[in-house]
Amino acid sequence: MLNIYNIVSKKFHPLDCFPNLKQTKTIIDNYNFKKRFFPFPILMPINRNEFNSLKSYKIIEIFYNKIKICDLRVIEIFEYDLSNDLYKLFFTNDYNHPGFLKIKSKDNLYISGKFLNTNERVFINILKVDKLSNIKKILDKKNTVGFHTRNIPHLGHEWIHRYCLIKYDILFLNPIVGDTKNDDFNERKLIRSFKKYIKLYPKNRVIFSPHFSTVYFAGPRETLLHLLIRKNLGCKSMVVGRDHSGVKNYYGKYQSQDFAKKFEKKIGIKVEDVKEPYFCSVCNLIVNISLCSHSEKYKTYFSGTEVRKKLKNNVFDKKLIRKDLFT
Ligand SMILES: [Zn+2]
Image 1 (cartoon, rainbow, N blue to C red):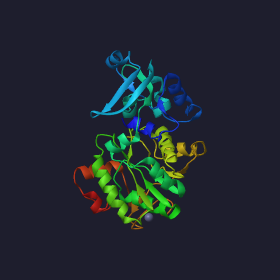
Image 2 (image 1 turned 180 degrees about the vertical axis):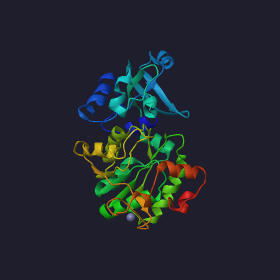
Image 3 (image 1 turned 30 degrees about the horizontal axis):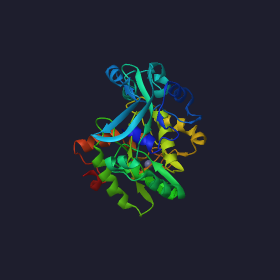
Image 4 (image 1 turned 135 degrees about the horizontal axis):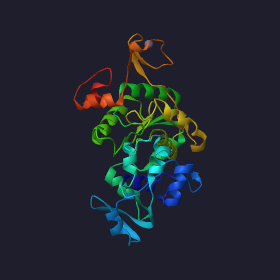
């Protein structure tokens, strides 16, 4: 459902369908869809039983919680073993990578097709989001930097946000919700925190809207997709910090950042490559490596996993997060 919304609402532009086999291979090998940049295959895996019941249909009705969201005009149902592309997509040889398990069909079957009778209004009502063209109109006009996260804002984020507000006209807070790791917060809590958080800032300088999307934890390659989405929404730049879109220890600290830098021109968006903030007990401030000369033993880093764990167990730590966002 979320992938359909992101295609229909043009967040994934130029992708306008679930790709067929040939298009899938071109996206994987050449980062291209219909000769335009597109970095990650958005696939619709199906199993053998689904294949048997769907194979004779040309048009499939798609429902979400009994609400019809669109028709899918089937272009092709194809068989493809994505295992050969594991490293190309996820930069790992581990078949248990959580994103790979999500994207790979157990029976190697995928359905490709175009969406008919779609209306962004249906998605807006289900997800309770703003119309994207309205957001784009505001972001387009100004020098806007996008910010992507899976967490509620902690003090490390806040440091990055204030740094961005010195450099840019608008900070667009666009946290990903809808489909994350099991230990991630529920989306209502995240949305509530962000709504409280933006009240700290002057009106019209910080804009918040959740980004509903599937998460693949694909590190470097998914970072490119995140950049393309923010470009499509009117951002001139996006923050790519430490281990963007990563999970566990699959990727190096700045692997996604370094990789994304190489694609700035191709995508048409600047990578704001901030170095990670930390609390230094000598400076007695939140700083980063460009602002502090002290050794590691004085530094406390902000870990998203750590923040999530503490919140889950209701352990408040004023060095990590603002009290009113914690509750
Ligand atoms: Zn220091």
